[in-house]
Amino acid sequence: MELLSPAGTLEKLKVAVDFGADAVYAGVKQFSLRERAGNFTIEELYEGIRYAHSKDKKVYITLNAFLRNNELETFKKTVDAVAKLNPDGFIVADIGALSIIRSRTDIPIHISTQANVTNIETVKAYRKLGASRIVLARELSLKEIEEIKKAVPEMEIEVFIHGAMCMAYSGRCLLSSYLTGRDPNRGSCAQSCRWKYYVVEENREGELYQIEEDRHGTYIFNSKDLCALPLLDKLYEIGVDSVKIEGRVKSVYYVAVTAAIYRKAINLIKNKPKEFKKNLPYLLNEIDKISHRPYTTGFLQDKTLLQYYKSNSYIRKYKFLALCKNEVWEVRNPFSVGDKVEIFFTNGKSVKTFVKKIIQIKGTKNIEIKKAHPNFKVKLKFHTYVTGNKTMLLRQPT
Image (cartoon, rainbow, N blue to C red):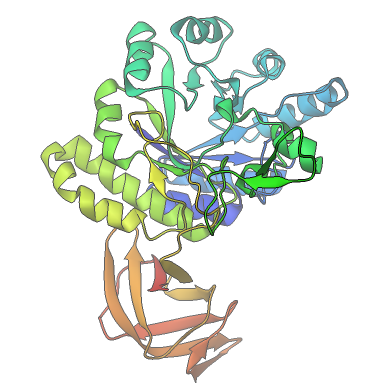
């Protein structure tokens, strides 16, 4: 079972690979349905694919926008340019995009969750059209996923397992387009569903009423975040080919932790299945340390409400401080000598310690300092001896 992580930028691509992803999905500047992600130039994509392939990892290119007539020629040129870089697949939602790609290259085609595939016959139809993988709609249960895999075993099946969920059916929402002019189906959603809403009674114009009112208000469209970690063994048993983490606009820290924890979980399920349940509380505790809304297992099994009415804010229990690359720490948030911190490793383990010394790298000089600030490059010494790890994260309880 492949672990597929988001790569909104070149840095996130490399972090996802380093922390355990088998494959990543990335978008170019157009047609990728994530306008706010950094996305890739052709040059960056070349470097990213080269880096991933050097570590026997795969890169899938997201081209899942729904095309307009005036974009067809640009889309063809984009496909031709990207195909030369030898990616491992294209992810599309538009059937016209599928046809264009199939006529121009033999690179495998994956059907995006935006196509909301929910049944066996649709999977068969896409198979006939040349698709090699279906990213199933998030509305399906474990039972329905199993039925599809058994009925069409030759088709690769991919399932979302973690990240933000859209309140609309398979992400087909018009709220943002109507209220802000930013089209969710073109990659620029304003997340209008996260706002606070009121109702108006037709005979009482101008009188606004909160829904499910309490002193905090309510957020009736605000979905919880998906976390299928407790059901990962079930997806493995079904024979799901790839499990996908949402988040091309999420942080480097989010990408690293989700990749490492789900990698650890899959390895346990594959090699020591009895150990998975025993380690599940630890894994869930670690995944709780990233920024998230309250978790749900979504439509896979959870029978509870998917919406979170109390707030639209995130749960943030930890602050990301720095990323270590080859023993040099790149600082993202300030911290000081004496601070209590956690070091998070690529194998999903962490260790609690204190910062003993901060040495700033400034040109050819190394200067000992008491406090590190964002964009500093530093070397660190801890009260706990840490060595032999080229890539690590530093974090701190909030």
